[in-house]
Image (cartoon, rainbow, N blue to C red; front, side, top):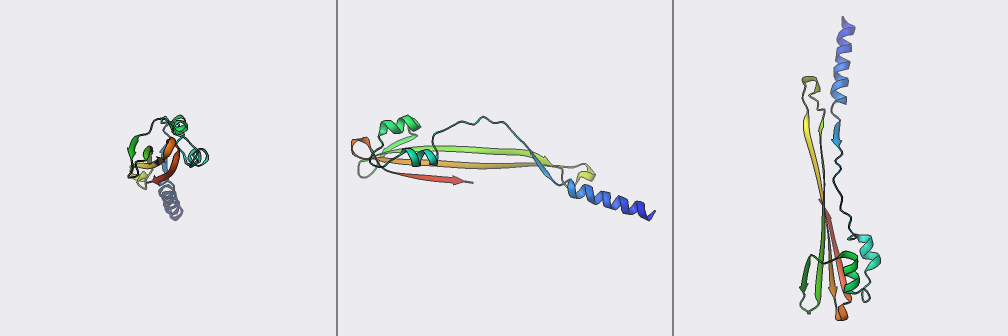
Length: 132
């Protein structure tokens, strides 16, 4: 009798411990490829050499075009990506037939700001990258 109580106790502990593992389903969301990456920016944009035509060929049309105080043309490119995972964990309530829904989302932002000087050549550029 004592052995059966001990066996029930250990089996209960086993299910409680191992039922709390979270699982996420993989969702095959379409991924849009973009040249707007830090690697492309560092290898392809050369201050004083790269032209507007070359930038257009690399990244396409900018999201925003403005002029700064020095009357230089400024192009802004922005890329945002979202990664979402959903699933459920077995929960510690498996013995009682319950589980929890789980969700996780990551957002990434990449901004490229290019300043063009005389003759439409890159004068300067900056990158802002964030993940949250």
